[in-house]
Structure formats: structure tokens, C-alpha cells
Amino acid sequence: MRGLQHPVGPESPQTYWIRRGVLLGVLVLIIVLLVWLLSTLLGNNTSDTSGTPATPSEETSSVSVNPSWTDTAWGTPTPTPTPSGSSASTPGSAPASSAASGASSASKTPTPSASSTPATVACSAGSASVGLTGGSSSVKVGAKVAFTVTLTNTGKTDCTWDFAKLPVGVTVTSGSDRIWSSDDCAAWKPRGKTTVRAGKSYPYKVTWPGQRSTENSCKASTEELGAGYYVATAEIKGGAAKKFVMQLHQ
Image 1 (spheres, helix red, strand yellow):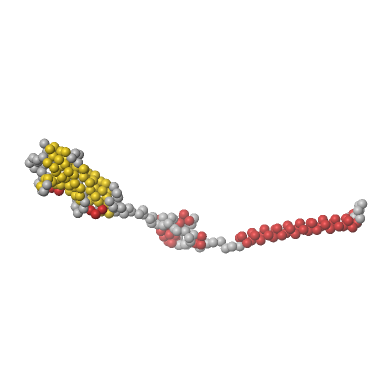
Image 2 (image 1 turned 90 degrees about the vertical axis):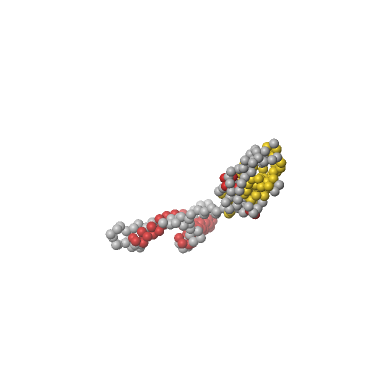
């Protein structure tokens, strides 16, 4: 105790007291720094937790709710209905009838149906072209000729070709003489509907039996045709037409 109050050593007492003062000052500085550091940390924690937490409505106000999502998808607990026969309800909870109504509404939430594919528009004579080819331009008298008729959709959208509303006929003539026509018999021309994509073609066959036909009759004439040039014409009603020239020989 005497050494603490009266320093003993080779140095002067003043030197020892200066050393003690410096050491004490360092300890005080360390304590001050520790107090400041603790107060800073405690202050930050207080400011982080002082804000009012956002309510569920604020957090989800910008979300677009899909009708097919149920309440459970948002983490909302499903209310437990009160047992039947009991009129008492738990304080703070909704009545049993309301809970049942809410559960029923959630179970009956409509699911949006997939958008239906729009119907294809009908083809028109103004947005179509026709092509006509035969097996050969030189045909023996009385021989059958299989023509290929090609319908092309020149429009920018797909369309449905209804042969009842937009018929296509094939006619064979020799000069001004009408020899044969697919319009003379319903069985000689296509029927029904078909979809033709934009810029695409639909081909089908029409057979000329190499004989003369009679209007509104499916029976061909037994009259023998003479040699010469014959012209087959495919024509869209009210629209484009295409010719194919062939020579009949003995």
C-alpha cells in the first residue's frame, strides 16, 4: 500500500506519477470508446425496429390477383366453422355461417377459361386464284382426262372454302360448242368445306370422261367426238378462271 501512495524505484516519484496518469488516461479513453460503440449499436437497432410494419393490404396492393388463386395461396388461414348446434362463437372470430359462406365462395372461385380460337373467315372470289392442268395436251378421242384444279388463297389470312357458296366449275368446249361441264352433275364436282391457309393452295381432281354431257344429267352421251382442239376452263364463280388447251386425235 505504501508503494502505491509513495512510489519506490530508481526513478523520481514524479516520473512514476506521470506514468500512472498516462495509463489512467488510456483506460478512460478505452471506456469512453466502448460506451460510444455500445450506444451506437443500440441506437441503430432501435431505429431499424421503430418503423411500423406494413399491413398485408399495403404489401399486396400492387399484385394483380388471379381469380383462380385461393385464400390459402396468400397464407390466409381458413376459418374453422363452429360445430353444428352451437350458437356460441370464439371471441374475435367470424360466425359459423360467415365462415361457411367464405369457404363456399373460395371453393367456387371461377377459373378463367382459355380464349377460344376465332372462327376462320369464309374465302371470297376476290381473294383466290385458280389453276388447271391435265395429264397431257394430246388426248385420244374418247379417252378420259384427269384434270387437277388448284385453288390458291391469295389473301393474308386463312379462310374456309365452302363449295356450296363458292362453287368452282370445269367446262370443256370446242369453239362455241359446249361439250361437257362438271356443273351438269353434283357428283362430278367437290362438295363440303375446306380450310385454305393464307398463300397456300388446295388441289383436287376432276375427271372428264371424254364424252359430251347433258345439263342436269349425270349420264354422258354416247356420241363420239371428232378430232381437233378442245379447251378446258376452270372458273371460280364470280372470280378468276384458267384454261387448258388439248388436242384430240384418232
